[in-house]
Image 1 (cartoon, rainbow, N blue to C red):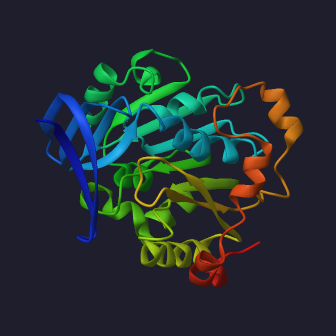
Image 2 (image 1 turned 180 degrees about the horizontal axis):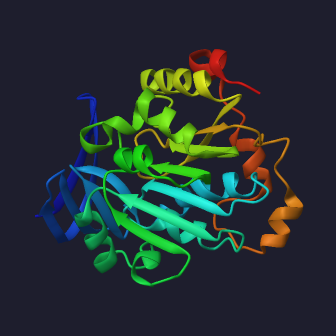
Length: 285
């Protein structure tokens, strides 16, 4: 008999993935963490039965949460990642030679443990010591409130706004992020589905619009996320993701991408009308 893992969403639909075996399963102080070997998507990480990454499509998410912001900011020397326990965001950040220091704060050490062992390509930055990279197993909300550091870019690579990630979608958290961003700093955050999480996007964009002079959203498609269409928020003190994006800077970086490119960068910020109806009043140029 076939075995499946199933992700349920909003109690009205679910997605099932056929699996060969469970590779890792542990209940941490925060959530259930599992890595499974699937039939069609390679190895897959689930937190509390929600799909976080799969080997087949993780590059899409990690390309789009990192490269649009690091190729908009002209000098992203200091980067903070909050969350991102699978390591893919750190991997992509560290491909940029301009980054002198990357701090990553992940609340759940079990996620890091599981990904180091069973998703080594995604988690390579977590397993290979690098002088530019520091990993902290800590509460990101507490870290950003108490740190004395200033960052050029903050990347909030969080799970959905349930459990330990809930405060990462709150007003106080973004006030602390704003305080610890440089005068030309940018924050990019996991922004949920424009279809199924419209209310969350509406709340988030209002919070960002209270603080930042430039607020945009960008979309991308992911195989394993509900509905396929997913968003990141982009909030900046100075740099605009279209006006200040530089193809020359992209050429100088000399990076090979699997999903991202210059045309994708520009197109990602063109939002569908139903999403603009929901959040467009709070987008700021």
